[in-house]
Length: 397
Image (cartoon, rainbow, N blue to C red; front, top):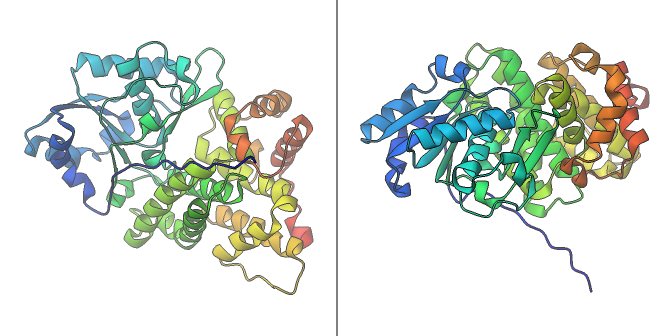
């Protein structure tokens, strides 16, 4: 008899709450650390977000060096620059602070720091032979959930293809989530990263690899995004309650997809981001309704549950396939409320690249969780509809 085995990996320790960043210095001794390399980007550094972290480290009598060369969609080149900075600083702890790109760079640099070689030698799953340095990951956006994950994405600087690297050795020794660090994020970034949270949660919920625990926190994350994203975006520094809920939703969605995997949205968005520099959260936000319509025939009941989590009334006496379209309507309306474009034509993506993007997406590891089997024609059709802005849900409801 063949048994289906499941695996779920999350950090052993998570510190969550307002003011958590002020506690970071107290954790250095627990990791026998004296000097951290802070991996971040210039925007985060210049925004003053790091001051409470600097103060806490200094108050604990510890030291730090800073690498602020992180770029969106980090390349192998940037990763090696960060790894060199770790060696030059004689650091003994990696401290990643920022959005998903900063945390991915920190994870990837930690691999090179103790394993050597080229970072793309480790693409795939379970390929890192030796332990990485102690690590603390702190998000400044409510988006990727990377702080609680064991994956990182690195773009090949020669091919522009985003490669996935996954290993339990990449789990943070401490994931520290302080909602106050997300307050000053620009509204457009809050919108895209917030919809990224929703994408993670939806794809994890409908994944063929979903587990009871991943589904529970994914659905709760969907509800939190539906109730709080607009308020988190609308106010200049965000609504404190909404920011806290979005930070928790992001963390939960990250935990969910670490066990359940993702799907066709991510398989496609990785290619669009790699080829055209479209921000990851924005690409996900645009693609999500189109992929949902493609997947709907396979998981209509789950879509009804997603719709309910987003506040849509479900008629139990109606056909489940019809009611399931309400999930797509709710996602589109939420995106509209935070000014997400409805089509890929509004981005730098080029329509003539559709065949190539579709072909590359079929090789993306994220696709393994998608509930509906795909082929080249399917992927091309999803992209065509996303460029045209064609959704069927309005005609079905």
